[in-house]
Length: 289
Length: 281
Image 1 (cartoon, one colour):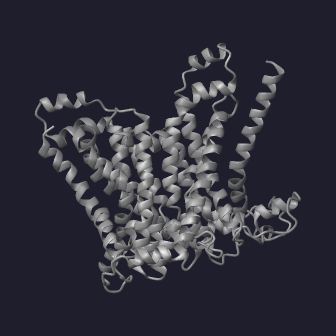
Image 2: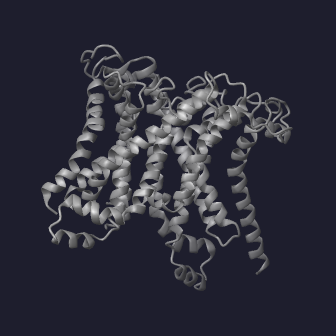
Image 3: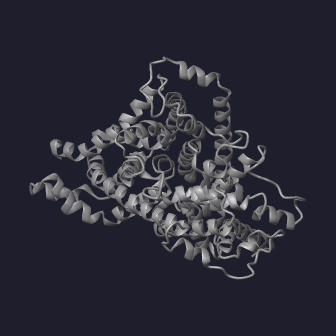
């Protein structure tokens, strides 16, 4: 391929990306060292004040804690449930084709719609969850799942896992297509039990795609914003205030553009570590094409 | 079948039914709510089965009357479709040629990795500068501005998705054209793109799904029916003082039907689309 023609084909994308991604990134980096306010003047250079402030502020530590707990718990739950459902639907069962189609529905549901639906279901006065639990005798009186700091994050996590485990199940199912059937039969003839067969034959094949899925899901979960914003806006008592919600509130509700930018930088630093883990996971796969 | 195997199959069916119920129960309930009379939904204990079928909310949401829920909702629907279409067009014009080069020329791989990397950054990284730029050009609350903002998400995605698709089109077919001395863009237009039609269709649908879902930019950069998208309207409905849960449910159903249909259409490519090749390079 002639290299000038190539350059011309690449150039439009690169220019636009520099404008809409490159420049904002640099600007956020710069802003994070200033005390700029949103809609106000550019602000003055304050060195590391914003960062020092972030490390001292309990709000940042708390939001980091909420984000980590949310990420670890939802990703673990959706990986386990997704893997289980994937294995189940790989069995020769009637109706498994319908089930595979059904898995698409939560995946395709817009996150905001999912959040709104669960918010209605969790409603403390007329919600379906309370109605169901009370009518079956599991709880005595209606609970406010999203209004109680002890249960709000769990309730959001359940809503999130309900939507996202389906992707893991789909990835597991796709990975299982690559498991050599002869090998499984051979192992069975050799007297390997179901558990051993799974560990020796199935797991090595589906582990690489699952690893990638796990890292990608971790990165996504760490960015969590939409579902929390719609369900609780970070409340009650900041019990569901994730890093993204904190950045949003600092930068846009309190108009502290500089401080908000420094918080965004910090969460990106953490995301970078996760991306590093991702590329390691990809390289470990060792499937150069 | 031994009794043990039979027991295993019964357990498997039971588990499958449980999964189906877990997925279907919340969805089914939202649909039931959307057609239940308001009185039923605010009765304790909840009667579950609606005393009458009430399609009134769908009618309200889908008729354009001044100052009504329908006006807000339909304008949002229009804006979402408009932004989705616009963003997709931008993404295609820019990403198709670039993705093709990334697929054919190996030594620019680092640039591809850089672009894919930005896809994983939280949008909150771009949001403050974007807001400042848009407001200084008085572009807040405009669907055009939202297209630009959404491009920050859609462009990296389409680039790597198209790239991994182009990888599956053998380069030999193009080399025949190159020998004839055709220009690069002519080879792309005449030889590669016709072969890539399914790939382009799939990418188009994925891009539209991403925009349909987008919430953060939409809530920050829009403020009224001129640019507000469906996700913003639904979020506002959810946190507002709507006393009719059926209306919320109906809005959710209408907003969910198009992406779910698209998802079912994409069934085969979802997994490859979200995990496979592309990032592997």
